[in-house]
Length: 60
Image 1: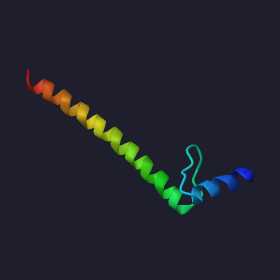
Image 2 (image 1 turned 120 degrees about the horizontal axis):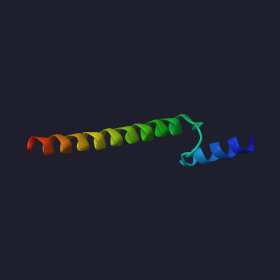
Image 3 (image 1 turned 45 degrees about the vertical axis):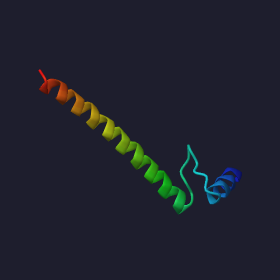
């Protein structure tokens, strides 16, 4: 229970927990957005690699 109290105190001061689920709605939203950013960054890298692959094949 002490861990939950500490986590909630940190979240109320704007610190997002790294390895646990957020307790406050704001911190949950931040975690969702951070996950979305990571997913979009991965997709962007895949598209960059695919474009480079297609462009190298188009030159042959």
